[in-house]
Length: 386
Image 1 (cartoon, one colour):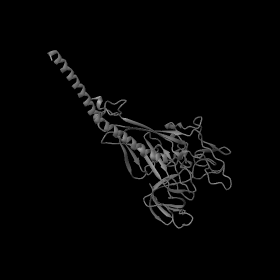
Image 2 (tube, rainbow, N blue to C red):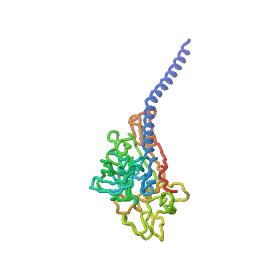
Image 3 (cartoon, one colour):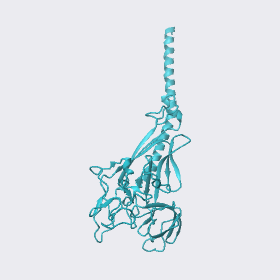
Image 4 (tube, rainbow, N blue to C red):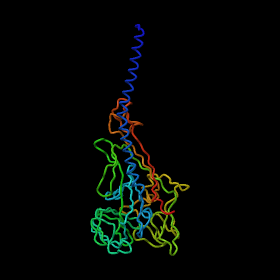
């Protein structure tokens, strides 16, 4: 081999070594980045599972009480603010872009009609109708100490509490200290899930956590390093309507397509401030006429503007402590947008399209871009009556 051949061979060797070295370095970067990407995707899956499980059940109501049927016939199962012992409505807050509350009655025996109640200011003593079946009538079945329960009536009032004792047909429930109603005969008590999902700042990372509030005392982080969350709502474009009265012998069925039923024409409901024959979703014009308008053609849900969720009409009325916008009764689909980031700042590049919050990465090979998911859910219990 002469000198020229030796130089060519050396050059080829150096070039090959450089290529191999570059491939090995990139492989090392990939081995460092891929586990972090997988971690972000796993966190996104956890969020979907938690949020989706509750949202799919939203609106499920009791099955065997006087107010049987989906909750949307009385109150909104989904709201864009916190509900429970910490209730945004009491503070006059009716919309948060990064918050959604879900309420439903799980498949349970713990549901009963209320005969009477006594409120001591923090504890509510509820005399409930026996619900153990045709052969047992001496006690209320299903309610146990520590259970979360919801009390609601036909007028849109609802409160959550925690069972502290059960004795015969009397259930004692602890509440926040300011009930929406006295819950006399005609109201219902049932086991309930009242969950709120929202973003909370995480001082350790500077980002946020997706948190689930149980409506009582506990906030539990669901996912860390969430940099954005937004919830969109889609509504039934049709206004509510009063359904034909059932014939004699027909099974009990809803009175309205959704929302609380109005009182008879000319009759005033003492539980609200609306006029005779009216409530928050119907006016009296010689008969019930929808107060809510048509939102669009067809039957497909249409997007709701945030302003529509906080401008009324208010249920049960505008002065009620826990009033809600009547448009919440027409929500039929929810879209969640969630964006998570890699926890390691050295794998985030400059803030922009790939990264909501910039990091310190010096090479694009170390980039682990934010992961974003979009989840659309149409809960089966929000349809009201056909």
